[in-house]
Figure 1: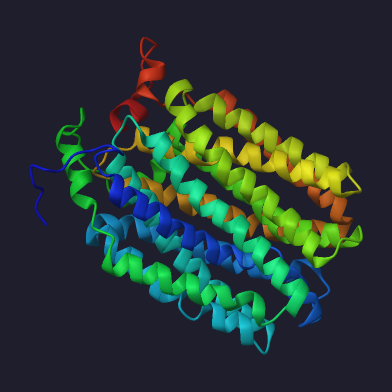
Figure 2: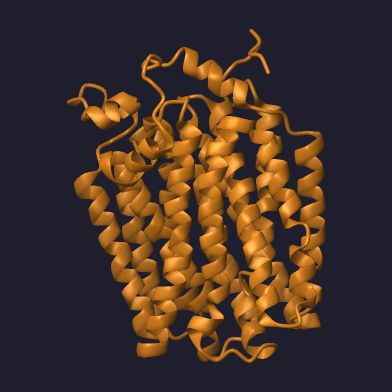
Length: 427
């Protein structure tokens, strides 16, 4: 593919493709939303799993496979192009609804979540990268806000729908019928309508202020994003803890609500509040981070998440649970698109997709770590103490960002002392 003179960066200049990618990511989110409210109930009712760690095993395999695939997706997007990776992700997702409908044993459910994790890693990562390619520097936060808005509003809608279908028609197979439509729509749009965006990244790289910087190896990108770069590593740990508490909320909250006497429809509604607030809020927070910067929005968002988890832990009725879920969603909305925008601020366009892949590796390992940690803690200490443990970790992550991370948005930090070598060369 060659770069043509008509290539322009910005959301207005690429509105058609950007809107299409927003829609595609909505179908990506809807796929994972199918499991959000009912899979723990299926584990107990259909497969008679008693231990919380065993019930949450589906989140562990999902998180590990999604994290590893995120890492590969970034590199493959740089090497093979974005669209090929996106289509491959949808092909992998094709059998998932059927496996969940008709699984004769829990191992089949785990297999479905391996495939779902691979699919999510390929599809969601690629839609992120493609939107960053199209948006350019000035509207990066807004672009990430729209991407995550679409994905997580669809998670909420799908969770609400499956909870309703489960309450009316039973746990299986009816709640998973919509998944067949989600896969078909996502695959057709990605294969036939979405266009490759890698040329936009090359176009941006040619005009980039550090274009002469030699492209780092994959190992160097991994070390920067994981440890050595203050900004990238702060973002990675915040992403990990964010999804750690999300894994806990996904697995333990439905069980916790059930012990308080809530039925499947009520649990489904609560499971939808959190990603709905999260999704809608990102329309504001993504653009806000373009104006006020990334650092303090991330730190404050982690603290708001911790407050939401704590409110759920101390509540005993619907109002408190709904308020806690809403706070958790608001805090996550502050953090999620801002973390991705910060990666885009720091990483050079020539290795940005790889940096996104490393970040998303650590972030989605949080699902597995959160499910394991909260499941073991719940079995040993009870549901309440396990929830409090995750609230404390989330609070601490915000302090790590406050102390270690420096502002990454050039316009916001203009006039301040330049960042250190790792960030300044990368950005």
